[in-house]
Amino acid sequence: MAKLTVTVPKNSLDILGIVEINAPIEKVFEAFINKDLFVKWFC
Image 1 (spheres, helix red, strand yellow):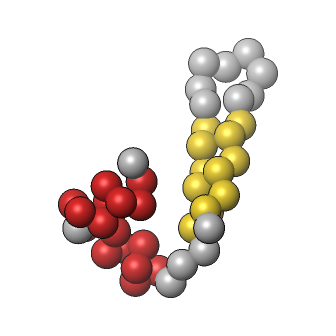
Image 2 (cartoon, rainbow, N blue to C red; image 1 turned 90 degrees about the vertical axis):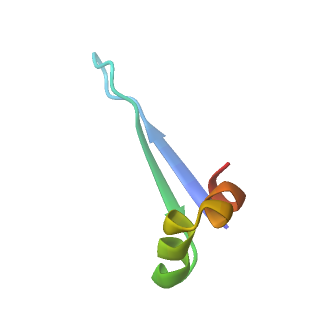
């Protein structure tokens, strides 16, 4: 399961989004370099 934390600092136009993914680093890396997995995990 993934957890998204969104922070919007006062008086700023920036939005910071941090996603924590409960998975081994190897699987997360593979999802970033494999188009089909990227679409499955992140879209």
